[in-house]
Image 1: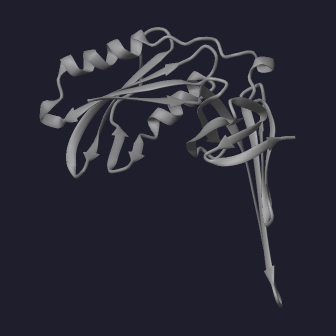
Image 2 (image 1 turned 90 degrees about the horizontal axis):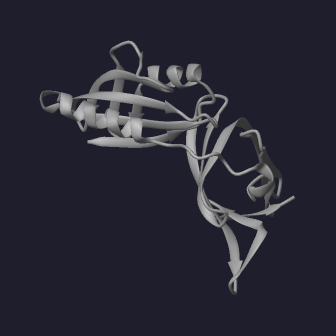
Length: 208
């Protein structure tokens, strides 16, 4: 099995640090059991051991750094007694075949800017900067007879998008190391796209 996933690390040191943390996701747990080794260009590779659905597995992981920031992880994995040099070679071939295109210029990327979700009980502000960083702010308030409640969350980090002007996915990593993704699509009504209004994970935001 070969798994491919994006990352938002800005440099080799950040990518190496993240690869060293292993992987914990949906029944899959992997720990790095070797040194990370350069595989030519901007590729690092390491060997992992762990469990998947309660069964012991072995994997060879490859981190590829894009010259434009971010990149791709390739993971070739199998049960310990089924892992082979052929599978490792297949993973290496996938890693070496990946090519990156230059991101759209900031002025051509409609996602750049500050976006606001207006709700009666609070609001969310997302600012996507052209240098690949972001800020995120959310507050919430509620009250009733004799009581009141308010809360505020803030975060910063790095982001990159994959898709078209109309729709795609934003991948992000916070400054605390949390990673995630968010789908986006422009508001379209009667065939007309409203470029100052986007849905982020199904919630409508308006450009400020």
